[in-house]
Image 1 (cartoon, rainbow over the protein chains, first blue to last red):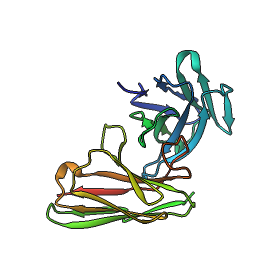
Image 2 (cartoon, rainbow over the protein chains, first blue to last red):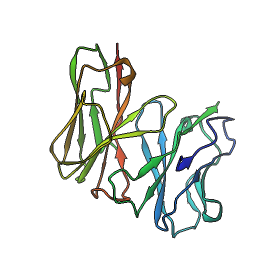
Image 3 (cartoon, each protein chain N blue to C red):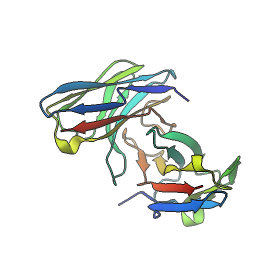
Length: 117
Length: 115
């Protein structure tokens, strides 16, 4: 079963519009971490944020904000006043603290965001 | 952030060639990872090295051979690849060795095309 689901495969918005990227996760662990990464056309996965399961406070960083809702197992990402440079593929990921194996970072399939000038 | 570098950025090779991908991390991290990213698929973890020892080999075919000579460098040696191996190969590193929930920092990737 997919641990991280990003239902939106592609989104297009016009510059200056706000856009929300959805992420739903599935875990039985009580301690876990959620991540967002940005992958621009250059290919590099750029780390954006890491949140632990005990901190449900929403976070804002400039035009970026994240809404963590444990009740719905969601960790959504909003870009305010989008810009062309925001065009990229965005990945949500989950890391489970109770896992003993080396493979404990699970990625969603990504959402491709296109910001139209 | 240019903490993790990868060379080459692009590679085209025939099925009988032998080539190597190189990754270097400048972050003082203790763990390094190889991932494969194919179109329309989630990232696939291939190998994990912790303090230069391989701790995970995720059922990767033997035509992919990793090498970690020290904690800053990671190689992926390629030989007799198949066209379906064409993908973006990403290297990452993290401070804590697995199992860990530490943030992984990624390099820019090598875009590999196998003809």
